[in-house]
Image 1 (tube, one colour):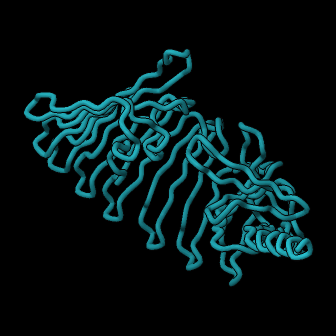
Image 2 (cartoon, rainbow, N blue to C red):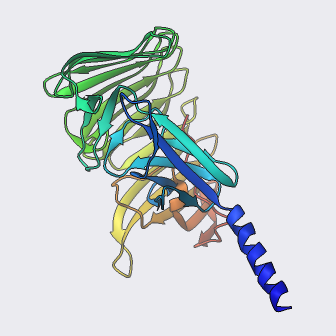
Length: 341
């Protein structure tokens, strides 16, 4: 009996090991052909915009809790990858291979990191270009100490321009094009980075394939102001420093939002969001009060509403209150901001 129990425990432990989700990263450095098992990275799972889980390799292997989308993060800075996303679908060992291009963008680990263009791990001086496997140009530009001297141009495999980044004395501009040559977006920013790849003051306009404006936005010190439009050109949404209003395509108000930072009864900082919803005739139908303690940013995060808990919901009919629920059950009431077009 004792030996049988020991055997069962051994088999059980082996089965548990077989269910592990494991990951190994093989990196081929710039101007090299040798792939090596890398340990200078972490895999990051973004549980929400305000919460991330980090998994580091042990003896060259990262053990993960389950299937999900993870992102490769170089601990001491590294190349800017076309896509750092890794999709883990099943149990077992996933081996990921990545070849650093001969010409690449390096991003340091610091909060104010600047992107430096490198060739064979050395900052570029003068003209440089990177090629696709078929020999056509992938990117080309002029550089000084790894920084853009005048402009850098990116291309699709077919030879059409993918994007163009220009450097001026105090700012950058970037134009992005689709594979048919239609302008997708125009970005302008100052040369001071608050976050990696995102400066403190910038503006951007994105376009629909028909050439009409989709979003016009500008950000200064984390305060985002924007206008979003329907494909017809009608206004869909407008956000200012403290308010946001959404409209139906016929111009009738769809929803409005305002927000403020306060302290709760225990002295903790909380961000309160007030959402009013309107019916198809523009009459007030519901008022929601929401809160989140993840309030590092001065404005709400519309892309991650699950961070907000519902404080109260008031419903109206013909301008009169018909019901009010305070701190309702989560399954019955969930914060649903107007969708992004």
